Length: 374
Ligand SMILES: O=C(O)CCC(=O)C(=O)O
Ligand SMILES: [Fe+2]
Image (cartoon, rainbow, N blue to C red):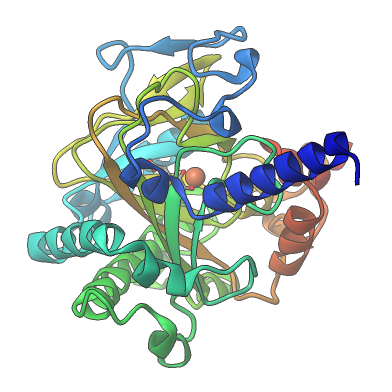
C-alpha cells in the first residue's frame, strides 16, 4: 500500500469513528467538554436560526399564543370556550392550555425523572438506543439520525404507550421511578387529549350536542388512538446561532400536548414570522398535527415549528403525541366535504408516514404536502 493510500484509510477510519461519536448523542458530546459546535451540527447559513430567509423572529411581547381555559371547555355553558378553541385552531394551529387539572406533582415528577434519565451514564442510556423507527422504546439523537446530513442539537427518549401492558416492560428500568411517573403523566394527557378531541369535533360542527347527546362515530375512533411520549433534551449549546434543537417540522398525528420546562426555545411559524412560545407556568402547549389537518379538510392547520437552543441552559420538553390507531386510514371527514369545499387530501395512514420518513430526509411539511390533492 502506498503511503498516500494508508493516510487516506486512516482519515476514513477517523471520520467513521467521529461519525459514530455523533450517533451517541449531544449529551455525550457535551460531557466530553466541547467549546464549539462541531461541523456536523452547523446548518447551512440560510437555515440558521437568525438567517432571516424572509422570516423574522417576533419577540414575546409582540405576539402571544391564544390561551384556552380547559375548565371552561368542560363547563355546561361551553359554547364561548369552543368558539375560542376554533379560532385558535384556525388562526394559529397552536394554543396554551391552562386549568388543565393535571396535578402539579405529576408534572414535577415527570420533568424531574426525565432530567435524571438524561443524567445517567451514557452506558445506561445507550441500552435503549435503536435505529428501528418502530421500536416501542427508542433513545436517539437529532431528528432522524439515519438520514440527517446535518444533525440537530437534541437527544430524545421515545416511549410508546400502546398497549401499555405489552410495552411497559421495555421502558427504561432506571431511574427506578421513571415508569410510574410517565404512566401517571401519560394517563393524564390521554384524558386531556380525549376531552380536547371532543371539543375540537364540536368546534368543527361534527358532534350532536342536543339533549346532551354526544353522537359521533369518529369520536370513538379518535379516543382509542395511539399515544407516544417523547422526552426531548436540548443540552446548553456553545454556539446556539449555528444550529437548532429541532428543524422546522410539523407533527404527524392528530394532536400534540407539550410540557416545556422554564427554558424557552419553541417557536412557531405564524404570518411569516417565527413566534417564540412563552413558558407559562402550569400550562401545556397544544398543537394540531398533520392527521387533524387532513381530517378537517384543511380548516385546521398543522403548523411548522422549530426549537432554538440556549447558550447557558439545558432544556427539557415532554411531548405526548396522539393519533389514530396504527392501521386506521385518515381521511377528510365526509361531513366537511361538499361542492363548495371539495376534498383537499388523499387518504393516508401511519404506516405510510413511517415508510415516507424512512425513505427520504424529512423536509418540513413534505409528508403532508405529498397527501395534498392539487
Ligand atoms: O421541544 C419543544 O418545544 C418542541 C418539541 C417538538 O416539536 C416535538 O417533539 O415534536
Ligand atoms: Fe413537533
